[in-house]
Image (tube, rainbow, N blue to C red; front, side, top):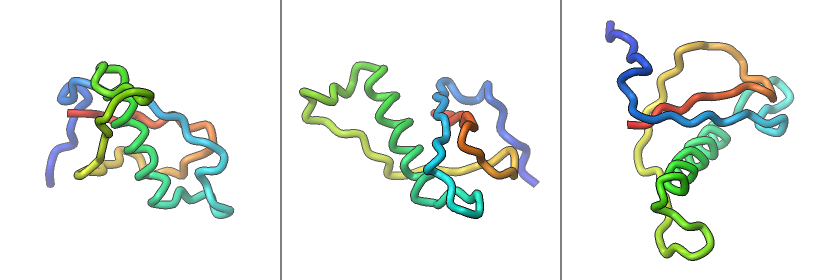
Length: 87
């Protein structure tokens, strides 16, 4: 069994709040919503780093690979704060 990774192994992280519309009637978050979270995190990181200017930049941020590791298996509510760790 692989040991869980620790927060200290990631130099950066961003928090993303979940929204009411992220959940379906059963309280599940659809996979496409997770991809929206990844897109938000990558673009926010690029903007904060000064690499991406959303009004003038020719560059765009893309997620071409991701790995998901969940530390807690619980339903996400509409006011949950998710932490995304970045290498």
